[in-house]
Image (cartoon, rainbow, N blue to C red; front, side):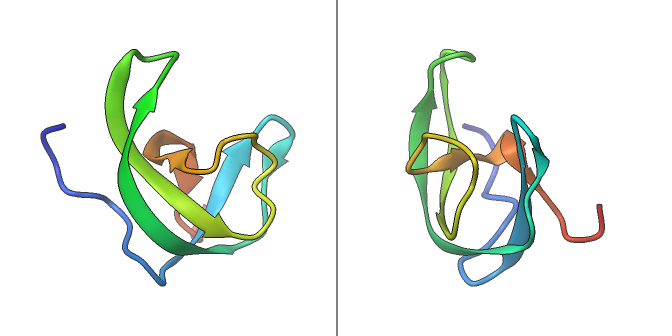
Length: 68
């Protein structure tokens, strides 16, 4: 991983899941996680609420800023 996390703990974001975008959800924790489909480590975010995904830590690519 070559960059710092885009989002920060306590920040609100939306999640792009299988059915569309969620409402805003708070980020509780951030850690490196292995993304099976990409076969690489990415930043993962533990969220405070229903994400619509089966992962405990949502990969950064699924998060969207509130402005979207």
